[in-house]
Length: 222
Image (spheres, helix red, strand yellow):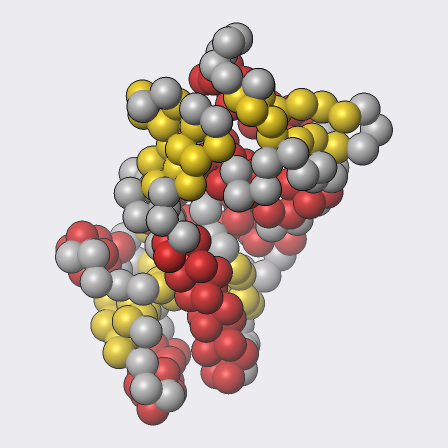
């Protein structure tokens, strides 16, 4: 596994680097957002360890820019910001997992391996088609009748979760945890994402997300 460590604390970065390399992984290191971006642009990184407090900005901005560009590289945020609001902000920016300092090195590797397994499972399935909608995991593209759908990251996540299991009923809780990493206080957030998807698909799109009152939602080919 090729890991990029974005961390400005030299001691923490060196401990992570030495431990992960001793476990057989390949590591790169960047102390700033500016140094991290060209390494990510090469497309050789399998998973990203990302600090929040960096000399040239908040690591969440890098996560958000990656997701906005449609890049689903697994991201583990590793930071001293352990308040609930900070964690929620990290997940909202696109982090797949969040681990507060101090941490156990073995737990870091375990979480990275779990993220890589989930990512590999998605990418190895190849293009997935349900009715007129298709999802290409390698390109991170969703198309409807061959036309690319331009969707925000959360809407893409919703479809990626539901497409492999058409007609399956998903509870509100399942979808919220998959999209945000935790349940939402209000159902309005999920409704907003659903509205975005439905608007993009439109009437007569040949596929729809149905609301099963009191139970949840399912993706069906119309």
